[in-house]
Amino acid sequence: MDRLRNLRTRLLSLAANHSDRLVNEALATADARKWHYAVLATLAEQGPASQSQLSDRTGIYRSDVVAVLNELATRGQVDRAPNPADRRQNVITLTPAGRRQLGKLDRILSGVEEELLAPLTMPERAQLTRLLTTLVDHHGHPM
Amino acid sequence: MDRLRNLRTRLLSLAANHSDRLVNEALATADARKWHYAVLATLAEQGPASQSQLSDRTGIYRSDVVAVLNELATRGQVDRAPNPADRRQNVITLTPAGRRQLGKLDRILSGVEEELLAPLTMPERAQLTRLLTTLVDHHGHPM
DNA sequence: TAGCTTCGTTGGTGTTACTAACGATTGCCG
DNA sequence: CGGCAATCGTTAGTAACACCAACGAAGCTA
Image (tube, rainbow over all chains, first blue to last red; front, top):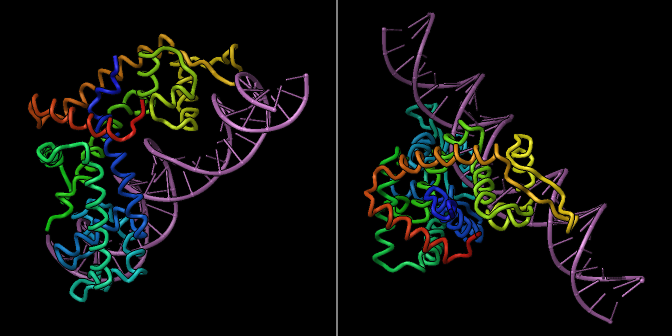
């Protein structure tokens, strides 16, 4: 009885679904989605990269990276230039506007995390982080 | 640095995403998706119900319940009859074939949970279940 | 040079989540 | 009782995400 309530795969889905909804609602106020954040954050931390590198690092499929970069580029948050050393590749660079946007998104996501984790104590949050990291690391993870 | 890796909302998404992929791949071998399981399990545990009750209990939107029931009905796993007491409603009943299918899906999902939680010890699994349940219960959950 | 691979790109698919609107029915209220 | 609001199932549509196949251009290698 109550299989649904006790099914861990479902609990995970429900929690993530709720989390994603919060994230998307919040990011939407800055005209962004989570893919945008993933790309901007990766560029800020690992520097300029080709699109396939971005795909590997964020876990976003290379065909979807194209669309995200199109949007970031038209917003002026990212610069896309052909790589002279290998003309198959583009070099994607974070612009100052992109860096500002990333800061904004960081602040937004801080608030979302706080809201999501509100019912948990600090040690519980650390536990959850540890357990989820173990799960994600065990199964082939991106990045 | 490494914001993505430490972002709890992202960890949750990644873990759930992986879990969902395992679930869907496994359920696909029985020609089912997770919505089918949710409906069958709910019917088995709470008895015959109207579609709006099923929607409330599973968290699946009523417009989507229609499509799921269409599929379950053509597979003969569920019976859909008008409710004589209120002709706006249908009464959805689990058939013997539906109960057999549910048993099959239960076994499949057991295997998936085991695979997903493999990197965790038993106490850790209990911890994870508790933490996720706290999260899900805190924010308005279905069912 | 020929052939394989990589890269970005286009154009799809499927699942999930969610909204709007409709006709039919029912319940409520005046 | 009669009208109105709410409910129910249904259709049709949107959006985000994850993922796949195939293409031409470019590079690498045998």
